[in-house]
Image 1 (cartoon, rainbow, N blue to C red):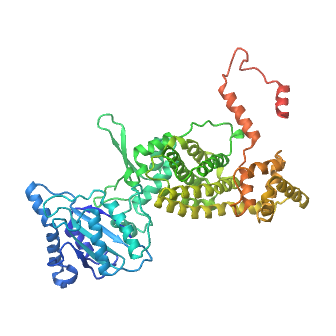
Image 2: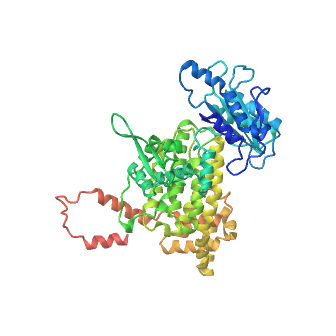
Image 3: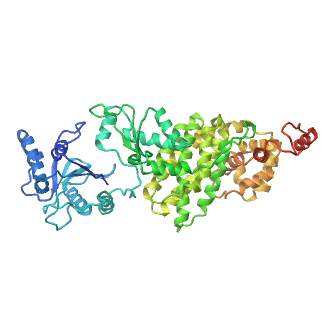
Length: 576
């Protein structure tokens, strides 16, 4: 059951909509099911058609009467005096009777502070039903005694009451929020999107684009540059004294009001973590990166996989009690993981991009909670995520991408568990939704790679030799590994490992020690990706030499810049 509190200033206009045919002729038999004082209230849904407009006006005046009295007394208009709360049952729920909806309405206005039980001076309100699955509660927020109601955090209080109602009426139990979700689009915004033939409202589209831009951007300027390149209009809010940017608003291409002006949404209105301050915290939490020569540059997918494995180990160490400091670190890592999904969706092999984008979009809700993130603790993962996006040709390495997504699946399960143990119900549910899409993206990426490896399975003699290595290195799981359909692919990877100068038995033992294999449904497949992601020691040594050389002065008295290399020394280095 979903309540959605909003405010307005036109009682008559809202009533006209509720008692009208609806934007798509979806309103049927509109009528009042409950009200602050049933006797004497005119119901436009139960009057003759020729009196309909007159009765609508009478009802609006009846509800607005305390408002007019207050306005006459204080000499100014009461702002946003119309309180509106649609309450809808979840898809698949049974339809409630009018009597049940009446009780729901009374409980909502009591819980929200609009009309507490037994308060004869409370606000005037009605509940209108014009569909099987929902009602609309309309109230005017001036009490009979002329005071304003105490309805602070009314939406949150209504949500809490709905959770209790669901349990008592046997309805689908929805997840409680914590105030960190992106605001839901209004019914007017949804109707506008449908008329234009768009699957998303402008606000939802802007939210998704801004999240992807934040994941890709390396600084604030680049963030706004990316948005502008998408055709999004950007408007900055400047401090009156310093002239510095203290906020911003975005407008979708072609989204205008009746006067043809762009409709802007503030960053924080799109999502709490898109406010200018939260955005700056995220962008500041990046590791400075150097760009080594192309021949020694590490594979960005493997680099990100290494960081993800460390993150997974950290999540495994979190007990249920956690701790404020630990939770702040995990929340930061969850936010950076969300950025990794967005960037992977842009750089992954083409067949996986749509599913990865769906996983990233679903995870947008899972990477926000009331826990304040310690973003600097996730700088390594955030930087690795950006390297995937900005390293040329990284999307061509399907094996490395599949290895990363394999690790990402385990990380996502751990993040969902972390949210669940801390009562973050909406975040845990979003993580599970993301997991469904991520599994599909993994399969789209992994299956072509595994099929290609299987085609290149080494000779039976070599395969038997590698099987002996498996039994020696991973004796407890050897039979499961050899029976796995992915074993031929793993044998090919072991042959490639051997050709690269590494001993299969040693790398198998190293890969198996990273994490237990008991819970792996396909242990050969898991080991294959772990071997793919194992760091290349020779490449690491080359990187270390490059970094050392870069840190040295270009010239010195002992070693002039024009000194020629020693051929024998280079030869010895090559032999090592």
